[in-house]
Amino acid sequence: MDETAEARLKRMRMRSWRRGTKEMDLVLGPFADAHLAGLSAADLDLYDALLAENDQDLMSWILGQSAAPPALAGLLARIAAFAETRLKAGN
Image (cartoon, rainbow, N blue to C red; front, side, top):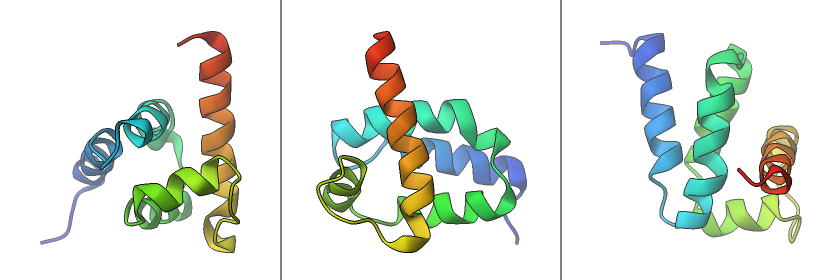
């Protein structure tokens, strides 16, 4: 049985909030809440691939400590910018 669009968003949101590290929960969870529903199908596919990566790599990429895979670089930059804006706003 195929996953419905609603079930996919719910799964991705849950996986964003329940990572392996609290730091990634706090980066990906709010981004998912704010942006998942508005992402294109292609961006949702990229986000799903991103969720399969380990937290240590994700954090390193988001912080700019190492180069992100080219396919994920644009999405990771959006996530990093969102997290930085939230941090500056104190949310």
